[in-house]
Length: 208
Image (cartoon, rainbow, N blue to C red):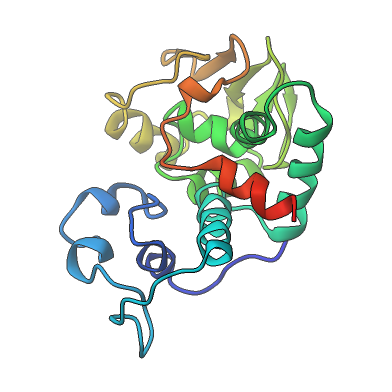
């Protein structure tokens, strides 16, 4: 997947809301949204009215930014969601929430999804006792995600565990802070997902 290499705060400014891509920085006065709450670029402060298509596109782009997913992979997830029973929009968010990097973030072992993705890619985690270094790996009900034994002394992991101890863990996950692990009790439902996403707009966009 192509990786976005520009300043991540520009993404938040483009969407006009915090996407929490910079971890703890997003909760301080240094957050770009707090300082410059308008779109980046020469014409960023102009308030143009979006068309129906523009609104749907922005919703898709925002969701992709939240989870750090490229267009090709996002479309693949949409096709998976369409082929599953149930509401396509809910299925899409459930699939995105099931990504290993997102689960690591939700468990509080990564300060942000980009950092969680990096930790997974560097081989810090295992699933059901086996090393998994693919951030897009989709977890299933009953899976146990844990920091690998040889990585438990990692300064980054220790710092995150201490700093993010008060971060609430979603009801579909169970965290064991002492063992640096977590278990997928069930897959996420729409009610579990606290992101300001209007998934029906994405479904409408892809359905054209």
